[in-house]
Amino acid sequence: MDDLPSPYDTLPDDMKTVILTTFYEDTVEDDNFCCDLGFSIKKEKIPLSLEQLLDQMRDSGRLGVLKDIYDRCLILPGLWHSIRTIAGVWTYPQGHEISQGFQFVCSNGDRLKDLMESSARAANSRFCAPANTPAKFCRDDPTFAAHGNRDCYRELIKSGPGLHVCVTRREDRASLLHDIHIDKFQQVCSPKANGECDYDYANLNSLRHMKDAAPWWIGKKIHEVLG
Image (cartoon, rainbow, N blue to C red; front, side, top):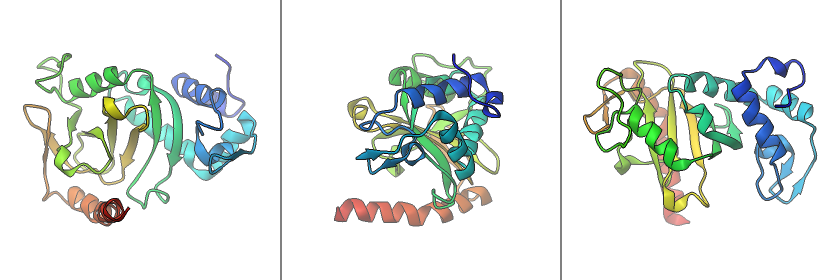
């Protein structure tokens, strides 16, 4: 594997691999890293060297987002390894102070789905976690889905931020990327026997998440209705 220029060569090797794969597979049609690679609405690309890209991502805060998500992925072995290339990064300010994260191309969507199901100890998973392995995530109630045609999984936390992993369903994977982000105030919940989330709506962290996310969710639904 090629190494990154200093001081980025100190990043974890798994993170370097994703950055390099994304950089070298970039095309005008697939605007990996989006504006960080100098694209103008997918029509014209301003070439950036790898070092220029990393400097720009560092200065914009987007490299910090990658590192934050990488660190949180360590809770579930295999999760970061499912990420092949990144097609967009947003910071908390760009995410309406609700979340920071990115969309990504997965090396194997079905395997990622199985991994997330096992992390919730869902009864219908082909790879259920052992009974003595604590669940790390739970599966969102699809009734309140806010991330398109995806199955979403929340990291189980007591307070503060938490990962939200959204796996695109098979029928839409050709046009809709997977999504992984950190909610600044994660919805606090516990897993039901089938792996679904049992939400603690009275928790202060949950109330803060709903307060931040509700206006965005309502606006998105209005946009969907009005086109």
